[in-house]
Every structure is written in structure tokens, then in C-alpha cells.
Amino acid sequence: MKKVLLVSLFSMCAFAGEWSGTISEDHCGAKHAAGTPADQKCVEGCVKGGATPVFVSDGKVLKISDPSKVQDFLGKKVVVKGDLNGDTITIASIEAAK
Image (tube, rainbow, N blue to C red; front, top):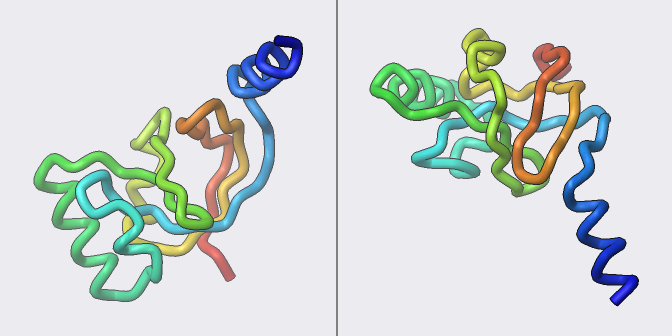
């Protein structure tokens, strides 16, 4: 019982950190993790068509609390600093990966 409670508490907590990954969109998800020019074009088109941007890191697709912060990075590899709470990331800063 104590282990279940402890795991539940950790899953509800936000974790601050830094992650590398790619800005994709919710229709294709991890399919655009490579960040190629073709990926960028597809992600830009899908978002323009109504898809929601997501952050893909280590094969995990995470929701973005404020998608307006990633509009300049659609389809690109990035480094994100922020807080992770469950499957949603709150971005404090974002920059292109080097």
C-alpha cells in the first residue's frame, strides 16, 4: 500500500528539467522525430491545418501546455527547459538544438 501511494505521489508531481527532442504535431507524433526538412514542412502544414504541436523526446510524445511558445520551431530539433507534469510539459525556454 505504501509503495502504491508513493508512486501515485510521484506521478502527480511536476519535474523541472531539460530535454532534447523535436517539435511535432499530434496527428503524426513521433513520426517526425528526425527533424528533417520534410518533417518540418509536414509539421508546419499539419499545424496550419489545425493539428496541435507536441514535444517528442526519447520516443515519448508530450503535450505542450502553451503551444504558442513553439511556433518558430515546428518540425525542428530543440532543447527545452521547463516542468514535466504527467504527459504535459510547461516550457520555460526553448532553443534550436546545436
